[in-house]
Image 1 (cartoon, rainbow, N blue to C red):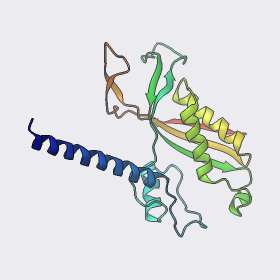
Image 2 (tube, one colour; image 1 turned 30 degrees about the vertical axis):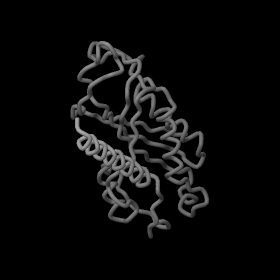
Image 3 (cartoon, helix red, strand yellow; image 1 turned 90 degrees about the horizontal axis):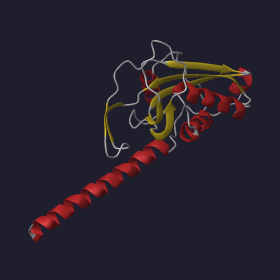
Length: 206
């Protein structure tokens, strides 16, 4: 390879690396930088059973979110299992000791005293609930998504006595495994999941 081609290749690689670093920084800031908006002291009405897309569209239209993308999502590459569940003649899924996990999750809660939440004296910020849910997703080794959201609910109720009831609606969006390497099992090929996601619902009350 000539020196000119080498310099050109190095230049292209440098630009790609710089672009990736810039995108990563922008993506991180877009997810974590607080948004200043005029709705901070108001309550936005979002109908129950609204879809995730409907909620996001509402928040964007009200100026609470800057844009629909990037959304805040998390992917867990280890520390999740699918095992020790009840089996019957209709069960076809095998036990999985360790797997990635990617879910869509909506969280709703009710206060023991709604009046105190409205006047702000015992209001639990949504970011605080989000952080408990996120930490549980990260550090809890679950046997199933049902097991995971149950633990999330237990922690939310334990951390926030103001909350009387918490509800979760989750969808399993984990990719389908297409191929597992014979020589290196952690190396795998995935495809988009089949559309039959289903909904896992759980409500915990005090």
